Length: 108
Image 1 (tube, helix red, strand yellow):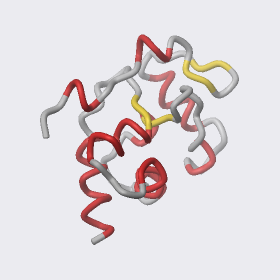
Image 2: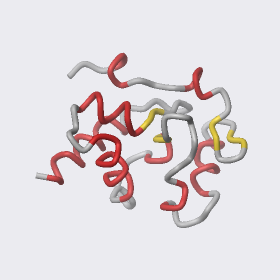
Image 3: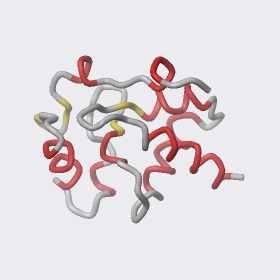
Image 4: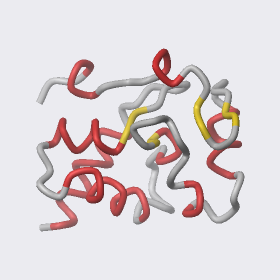
């Protein structure tokens, strides 16, 4: 059953546009996940090697809270910066402007 949740999370993350970010909580709300943001975090931690832009998922404050799961401490930041997103002190600059909410952008 858990894998189905993970695949649902991956489907949403794959739709986050280039140069935009979303949050663990926004994905959890959109999917009505009982375990909430933690379930999304577990899915992101298991997404390595898959075609999932996990670097576009940050915490509710725009902080790169999952950066330690990218193999190198600056890898998540580098991936975001390659998409034109500025990161300062592990936080997305202009987070409010770059935030992408699946509940507003996608239909269930």
